[in-house]
Length: 473
Image (tube, rainbow, N blue to C red):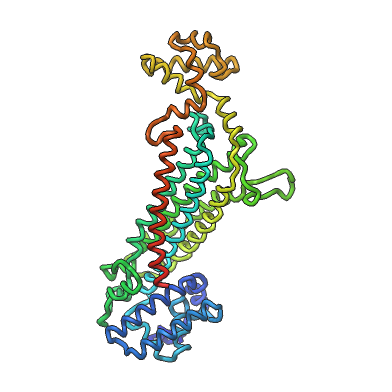
């Protein structure tokens, strides 16, 4: 007999049991389900809904069940459908029929919403910590490459020289936005739905705020219908995760390109590369490629969740069982990628000479020639046209700008003087971008300092909120 089977005259079809059961994946919520149950039974006792003696028996039984599940000694059965029913069945087996009092004043609808919020707030902390570690690895590479110049690109065409440190810092700030989105979402995740019941609350005189405080929530979900049917916090997480994945994928694309023989700007450590079963010379950036590839998987979970929710009336519907697997998989996918990413970046070899040689053999200093002429009071549009002619001449004669003689320069404009060679040198071009956020060395040093402060702020948030979660555990 099912724990809910009182009004049924026959057992459910075995295929229905198999199709509707969620224990194969929602067992991940066991720890959180028991945390919520301990707070709930404490509240039932405080409000004199059950006796203090019964509450103590149930609490001790829940801790025993938790120990058995953690040790792998508990049998979680598909017959009991989900983690909530399995825990309750194990509790009743442990302490007898008094265990059936645990479910007083609550439903699986508010229970599962609670468990998912407890799970997700822990995931927010873990993923934020891993993102900080990626930032620190990028920051370290930036600090070590404050004099390393490489071509900057637009449209994958060489545009202007930039510091490699500047390029790395772009991703530091990208991931900072990701951390800020995750940490901001905490206030929407950290609300307690418990006590909302199936959809309308409960007739028992419960204290929802007491349970919320016990579980270190910031407050309660104010509307019982919304409390059990809200999965905005899951969608928001999947959206934030998609942005993180996109940022990782963009950097992975550059790592793959840069490690090719055509670019030859970096070499990934052997520990983060693989070989070919057929071609012995190959060294493949497979980690970066797979992180890039798994981005589609994360996007898919976001679209799946949005599609599941889009046609659902209030309140809880069985469709919402589909909210978990995508969330669990996204958390594990991000954790796996980020854990690999920090050491892969930290051990990456930067080929400074090859980068500088690439900058010396292109026309990415052309804008500086135009700016030079503007400094001589030539209107920018005219300067742009002059420099275009200089570049065309150089291409036709298989030369670069620094290869031209002063006489050749002056064929196009008498304003060009011998100081042009200093102006067009790659490091001079870089350091000419001496504006806030620019690629000049001193401006990149400012970015490094600013990022250090942001990283410390993130670490402070992580520590504070980890203590909340650890206190609950």
